[in-house]
Image (cartoon, rainbow, N blue to C red; front, side, top):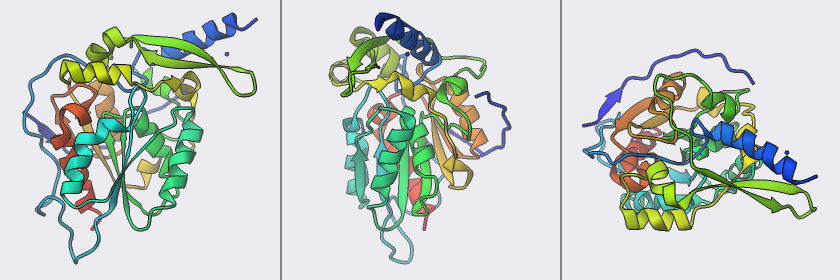
Length: 304
């Protein structure tokens, strides 16, 4: 069963790498941040059901006054790529929505957000901006000052506040914290010769941590093709949270083992988002594309 909760207001207070040694120090910091869910991932097998959304009475994909539908821009998180949105893209395009599933660089919060922000400048007309997991932090920053972004949609995603970094947000105490991620640090060399550190998920543990309710063969492909995130991205601070001025929608994945569902509820309430909860792993857009599409279309209709 699914349920939709009413938006609420919550107040919180936040507090803001010799080469092998630097790798170890960076890995410790990054894995500590990941302990509470730093990025895409998710869970135990679950029962599925029809999704409930906070929608109006319009038919799916409809607009009023013959206005063009807004462009839906989809932003993936870490350990994933844009192909994770395939099911959602199929449904949105069927319903007449222009869609772009962008490649999130995963190199750092500031640079990732600037990349998405600059792409938004090329889109004429209104935009519904959607983020999954770490992609939620990216859209929170990328949408700041973008007047054509009419709605933000968070899919089991981070929604940091101004002055907050993901490590601090993950450290917020909740009743049921997410377990540590099976992260694998891999050092790499930057063009100038300096060192960086990428984070992957252990392929053998990927499905349990990221996509427990996704078919096993699909999860194997997802694990093999996962894109890493630079460890420094987890310490990036959000200067301005776009959800403070842009209406938001939030999908809570109740079986998430990457981001605690309790933390998702907290972030959704703080943003005064329209909330939908479903029995899903962290990879909700893969296992429940119908529910995710319905939420996005509800946000799109609200821009009319």
